[in-house]
Length: 459
Image 1 (spheres, rainbow, N blue to C red):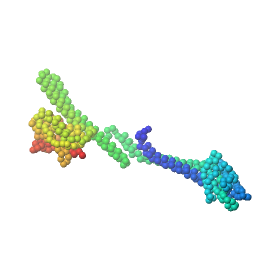
Image 2: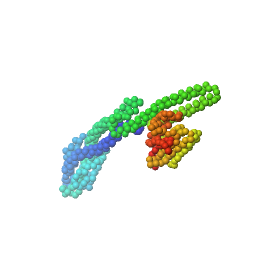
Image 3: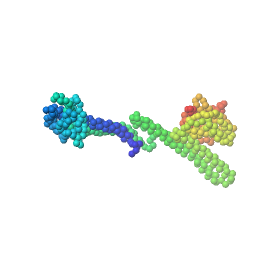
């Protein structure tokens, strides 16, 4: 399994137990060194006592060094299990006196204190103790040296027992620590387990916020999940509204299309057939516009889609769109113009803002009589960037200005064949971009001025 696929439980156990195992390994190595030293100290005391006993039995008779080897000295060492003991006594200038002549000589001091070192003798590891004493008490010059060696069998056995006992204690510590750590990790992850169970118990359509108590480390995750659920709920609600609006608003136009098509098929006169086709075309255009506005409204609503926010020039967008619509305005005998200087950078969804402005211009042209003037205007102000669409048509009474922002609302007595979605789309897009929407009178109190104030893009 790749490390990236490890569970949180496994990651925590590895991170917590790996340092513990490393420390235990270091302690075991240190205990091994200490156990060897302890074993040496223990047996060196016996070796020292035997060495001193032999040195005390050295004498000089008729100018010759003699050793009355004490049996008790060797018996103390020989009692240590299967270890073997070797000794060697040398006179001045390294002259061999007695013992094992091939026993390695060792450096000795002149203070009479024993020196200890490890060596190898006859294929076995041995511990050697050595000391040197002067021959002056017998009227001779120089020193005599005594060396006593013991194999390391019992020493190593004792060291192994000490290391084994230490390893058992460390193993017990590791086992207990592992159990406590595993229980602690399980208890620490219990909120996540409970959160998982709570989510699994939910029905597919339950997008309510999670209220399950969570520790501080998990609260940000729960908050992110709740925000995602809110966005999903908004998306589902937008989808439900779109389906309801589409089914309600398109049912009548589609039924009318079918009826007009059936009536047109019955016509035999060319003129009547042409009139029927024209009515069919007009109804198709209105239905197509209604469908497009429903889609625009669905995109503009919260949760209606992923907003692709970017910084762009609002003045350039307004100027380009105005130029595109001028030919259609000329056909309706509407004077459509643009006023403004750029650049005026704003941050938002350029496609949605373009659709919003298109609806504003379309509304103005649709409700204004022939010969009217429609002006698209952009300018910078103290609040940021302002976009205006002003006309000199019939306008909207102040009492109706709040209601015309509602979807499908049409002013009573309106002669236009609009769907009542244009300003609703503008309202939704403005809210989504944090813009302020204002409906006011046009210049001289005539017509309508739709004003949107945006925050200017940073930089």
